[in-house]
Amino acid sequence: MKKIAIIGGGAAGYFTAANMGKELGKQTVLFEQSSLPLQKVRISGGGRCNVTHACFDPDELVEFYPRGKKELRSVFHTFQPGDTMEWFESRKVSLKIEEDNRIFPVSDSSLSIIECLLDEVEKNQVETRFNETVLKIQKKEKSFLIQTKSNQYEYEKIIFTPGSSVKSMEILRNLGHKIVKPVPSLFTFNIKDERLKDLMGISFEWAEISIPKLKMESEGPLLITHWGLSGPGILRLSAWGALELNQLNYDFEIKINFIQKEWEECIDFLNELKIENAKKSVYKINPFAFPKRFWQRILEISKIPQDLTFSHLNKVQIHKISEELTQGIYRVKGKSTFKDEFVTAGGVDLKEINFKTMESKIVPNLFIAGEILNIDAITGGFNFQACWSEGFLISEELKNRSL
Image 1 (cartoon, helix red, strand yellow):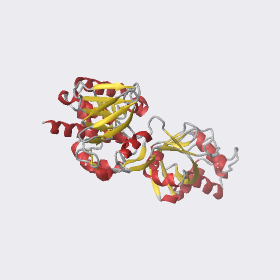
Image 2 (cartoon, rainbow, N blue to C red):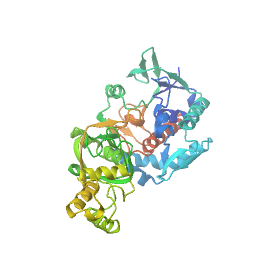
Image 3 (cartoon, rainbow, N blue to C red):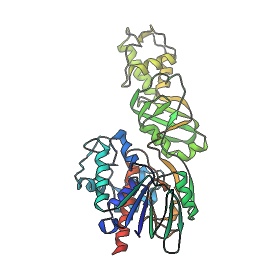
């Protein structure tokens, strides 16, 4: 009988298996319900795989996690992004740090990461069973019974890394764990507004976004989509406000500054523009970094006539344009989640996990890692880093126990 079962073939499960070594690996079986492992790794970063983030101070790194900040500090002191880089690069996967500090394989292909993990797991002689869904886990005195769709198995230790599905959480609840109700953490804001209509694809390098009702603020790139607004600036708000926005039933107002100028600054800027371009058409000169189509839409919304020159812009019109650019209020009604890159807030109560080993405090010899924990982060490679670090801790603990 093999002694260890890993349930879930995602980042946390595979990284645990990849670090076990042959002695433990040949005693291990990895169960994955789909036909292909590492699905989120595969599609992360548009297929490029945002492996981690270039923040190498654990005390700074935890600030990117709305939930799990306190618990992850000790985890990252053991294994942080610099260790992740060294781990992959020592296995001939070259990585690069981009301008925004996200880290990708030099190949710009997630396959580089996937193939590396598959190779390491194969080297460790871990048995993999795909298309085998675990339905139930029963704790016996010194072992666990695992019930799948096709069979029943017995193992001494279980590493539970199945992602955040409701069924997986129910398995842990039946073993005695408390589950914090999961809600979406990364999602776009659905907005039906004439100011955004037919402008899908327009992006802003930097915008300031706030949710006045929750006194929350964010800044970063912004993107107009079919459904409303997305981009890092929006996703940060969705992550930090996940629980509160769920309570609001995703019906709330946001305020946007598109130009990194305050209202009064924008008024002064437009008045200078009025003097410099007195005889020129307001519609033909876009004084900002975003596409002209958005500038023209703002003018339309501000009821500026098509044939108006800058010299004829009056005080009321300038104030209205400034207001739209620096204090635009948009009504959010609903959300659209990234179905493949779905991240949740919620899961196993963190008080029930020993973060020195990732072992359950409720069920001995049950190790839990990955998205099923009540841990989540903003975009940028942080969610993967938590998986790599947690998986490493589990493999180290199991190796120590086998000595």
